[in-house]
Length: 339
Ligand code: ADE
Ligand code: ZN
Image 1: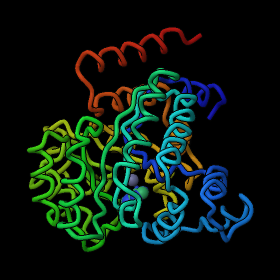
Image 2 (image 1 turned 120 degrees about the horizontal axis):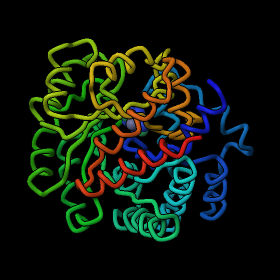
Image 3 (image 1 turned 90 degrees about the vertical axis):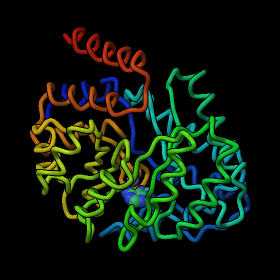
């Protein structure tokens, strides 16, 4: 990896489609919010916080992830979290971000839905105005809770429909298949939301979950979904439906033993709309461009493939044709201006 390729990756116009806002909580902001809200933290330094970042799978990550959120209390806290992320993303060449948030992780501890959405939405508006970056919010249901609770959360979201582009499904996948939420996703579709869901890496039923997401839920996109490489029929089905995969190489290397670069590269070669994203960048230490660079290094990708990944990120995004064409033209101009 030459510095040139890293600089090229950073400046390359791209969309980020798989980032959890709660996963962008950097230790420095965590301390600020704790102080502002009078919350005592067991860790006293950034180094001590990072000491707790020891993950070997999705479950061990989630055990660190959820407790950290208690510093988020007021709308201003949610605003600061999202605006800090959008500022970093903007510096990383991100022109458009579709960002997950987990309302149940907040309403479940007594923070009102309105507080969460007001804070996040105000950051979206401010980032558009001050940074020129466009952003959307995707409401994720926690799949390790009941379908009834997810449905109640969807009902709570309906008055804010114009601030939320779609719904997703995250958290612990074991024993929590897409099918469990079929009614919730059908209702969300009927209410005009776009649909995505996590099919995490190397889960006990990864292939069956990908199949359910594609054939039963009929999602518009899949988050992760890299195990699809094991099933030719599903690869062809996803291709024929034009389904994008929002892959997260550095995250993969934290929750499994590998980045899955060979699998991602194979899917790219097979013509799937593979995209590269950060997932939980504050925890995995890598924002959008870092993920492009890491994948390029591990899979031996060159400039041409990085450009395809960036184009894919806009093709898989929930954009109008006119905006898609505008972003693809930006990539074209960026590449043409390269010395
Ligand atoms: N919540 C935050 N990050 C997640 C991930 N990678 N998978 C499932 N749930 C998550
Ligand atoms: Zn994720």
